[in-house]
Image 1 (cartoon, rainbow, N blue to C red):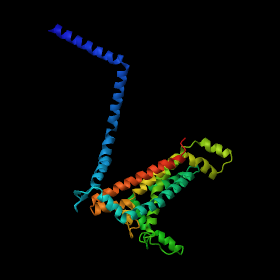
Image 2 (cartoon, rainbow, N blue to C red):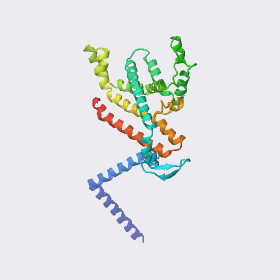
Image 3 (cartoon, helix red, strand yellow):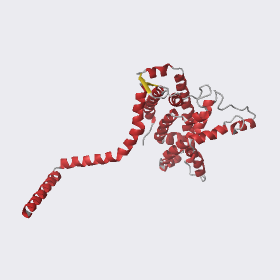
Image 4 (spheres, rainbow, N blue to C red):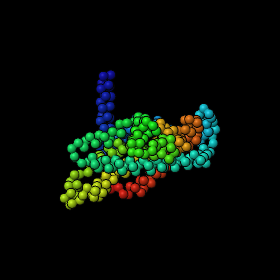
Length: 323
């Protein structure tokens, strides 16, 4: 028996060695196994991210498509399949064009102003003047303030009788402004507060892009007699254009998603003058429990944001100078 066991173990070892020799002797098979191991390792690493994306992104998207094709009862439960009726009702309602126009105005009021201010602040703070770190801290400070906290702060500033803004206007002999109750001023007031909140992040982003520009380029321009404005226009702006393009795309997407400050300060009023698409979606879905109409509006908003982003990449990216 012992001799038989030894013989079997020896033959088994020979088979394993032969299999190993065949694998190592076949380069294509070894390379295939190596690629398989790399793919399996990559899948293992990205599995948690895919799981989170599936739970918080892909599943809500599929659920929104499903709800947009159904009607819901007053409890928010799915009642009947209605097809594209929710979309037809959305486009036929007078509130949707108004929300779309208000959203586009909000983007025009906030995105260019935020980018211009952040670009100017970053250009100033790029210099190595003594004490410039204080200005960097001040310009970046809004990024540490949440939307709710910032909204409460600006609500105090916008107060018609106790607010600091009307106080200084009175000191200058000007009439007080109804910042949040005047339909002509409400959207501008919200935009002012939003610009203040966005500048911090954009300032840090653009300052980082400017600091990545080699100092030798500026020294060569200075030797050639280029002034500060000409240097900024012909050197800094083209070299920081990739960062500026990224900032513009993210700013437009963020402006489409603005909700917190509008919900706290105006709740879409007065007279729907600040009723942006996201707030209208919120009212349809979570106030009136019309989840079908709200989901349809969410998909339309997604399509609009996707279209504008594609247009930005198709036209604005042509002017981006990659190093």
